[in-house]
Length: 258
Image (cartoon, rainbow, N blue to C red; front, side, top):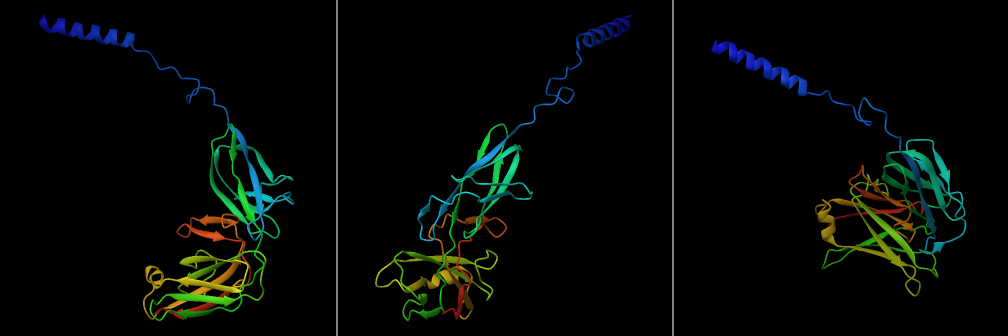
């Protein structure tokens, strides 16, 4: 009799539990509901132009080419340097920017959530027109520091900027895969305006992995003075910087590390 009462109570509880349970309702944004809105928007910005001496250029700003990397989608700047990609969906975008007579550049990994405007302003610099002549080198008798130098062929009324790349092979160049370090130098107008000299501490070579008796290689270019223009980070090569507003060809030399 006692067992019959217990069984009856268990059945009653099961019936009550089932009657109180409700099936879930699908919300409007759930997998069973209506699809959410597709967000789109614009990627836009300005391209500013700089001459090789670091001055801002305010004319000829039209017709710079901006391309969405990985696509054939491209637009062009207007007379103010403004560009716009319209109707882009949520995603991560990179753009390349090109103009004749200027170093190219990129804006990378632009996070775009859609439903508004993403802004990406970029700078372009004119290519340097100063070709670096033959390089020579000297090593300090006391310090062991290295000087890489050249005599520029002409004077200039403007300050000129140069860049020297250091590498461990004869293929050293402005390509990030080939250089270990770089140095910049500004040559100002005046009595020494034809003297280009880079002084490199000996410790820099050791820190870069060179040992005494190893060969170090160098490549020098003229470069646009606005170093933030026509420059971008190469994330595939240890985050090294790519500078593109360079004079060609470079001048090269090598030496034995003291």
